[in-house]
Structure formats: C-alpha cells, structure tokens
Image (cartoon, rainbow, N blue to C red):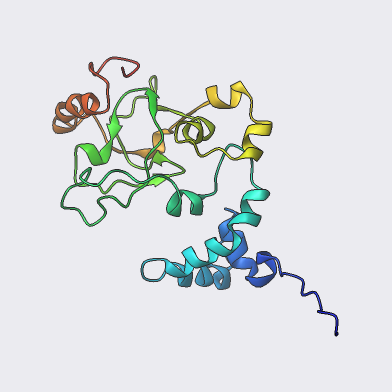
Length: 208
C-alpha cells in the first residue's frame, strides 16, 4: 500500500502580500509607498469583504504575535462586540459599530452624541470629541479591561496580564476635539449627553 505523502500547511503570512500583512499588523506605511497604499485601498473596496476574508485566514498568526491584552485595528473592525440595534435607530450603521471602551473620567462627550458626526473609533476610543478640556481630558479603560469586561481574554492573555494592565488607562489628546465648548450650542448639549453616558453631573469626574 503506497504511503500517503504529508502535505505541510502553508502559513497565512506566506499566502498574502507584504502590504496586506503590514496592514493587518498595524505597521506604518511609508508616505512614498504608493503601491502598498493602493493594495490596501483595494482591500477596502465595497464593504470590506476582501479584508474580512484575509483577516479570517491570518487572524490566528497575527494574534499569536500580538501584544497580549490588546488587539489590532482589524480585530476592532470585525470582531469587537457590536453596539445594540436601536442605539442609532434609523441610521445605516445601527448595530454595526463596535462597542467603545468605557470612559472613566474627563470633560466632554463623543461628538456624535450631540451632532451629526457619525460615531467613529480607533481601538475602541472615539475619534471625534466635543468639549475637550486640557486640564480634564477624557480618560478611558485599557484594552485589557475592555477585553475582560466582555469576556474576550484568551488563555495567552491571562497567562501574562497583571492587575496593572487592567488598571491602566488611556487619555484622548486635544487633537480629537472637533466641537469646542466655547460654542454655546455645544456647551448646552453636553450635560444631557453626559447623563446618557452615566455622568449625572457635567462637572462630575466619574460615572455611576
């Protein structure tokens, strides 16, 4: 009886381009590298199904080498828990956006809560803020705390994470401000938005 030849499985990295691999791993793309940027643009065409398929093939290898207690941008895009249907009733993105990381303290609110800005996030943090204050910047839970809160920590995460990883926080920079509280209408809408976030006093440092 002839012996069955063993076929080695190719690693996902060997099956995809260097440009795609860099994108999945959040590696910086040089400004002059038009070829790589075009390849990434093609992955994003339409609803991003090409990127999703690529992520499904490579996620195991990417996450195996990733910093424990954190996740790459493509994970946040496709695998982070979604906001509940009805959160943005009537909008095309209702039920499709990732759950953001929890705000712990700081002034202001996500700009989308008081304006027509579409909610947008980077690693679970809002990209557009209203009412930023230099002396009281918005502070959010760590990625590790988010993953633990949603029961998404892997065995690899749990082996290396410590209490300090969960207690660590991350503050937004002033660059995220798109709406200033110097505008009366912004200042008037922020208190109600903060109450919806669990802050029952606009001056309160922590939500209940």
